[in-house]
Length: 199
Image (cartoon, rainbow, N blue to C red; front, side):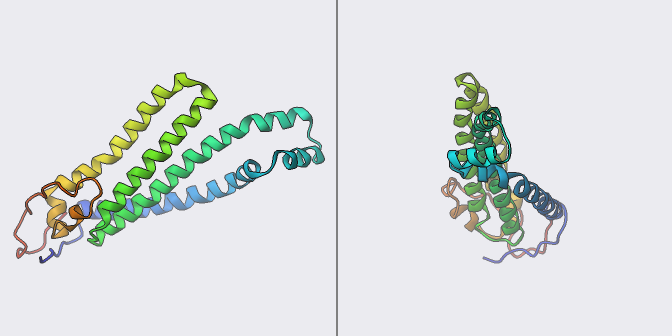
């Protein structure tokens, strides 16, 4: 099936700009995350006796060691959350790039991102139980559902949108989908033989 020769404009231009901003944010976030988490991650992975020896050698008191041991679960929980968000953010950028290139895998990549986001946030939610008790779980789960549901909005748009279907030129991206492969694709906005359109 012949694909459309779309001009860059409207939604496509917004998509390109958002990708550029996303890469800048990702670079800054990754640098801060790397600098801030290397020490924390090293402390988490270090055997307790070795950590105690390092702290005592540096002149730390037993009380300091107890404080460090107390915040380790908090550090681990934050690492799970921040890593989940970073991986999901990267996969979102990859999916946008695939869409711009009319790569039929873009929807599958986005759905994989949703799975990673859901699993990571659920792990974070249940780690919170050990930190703050079971009373936090309902509120935390509601936030998780809201975040994933908001992210899933683009999935529904991509599957139902006539503009996306017309831009892609075929329904191959729906056939490759994880969750929506059996959805009836929308009818293209214009016949395939028509000239370029804006997305």
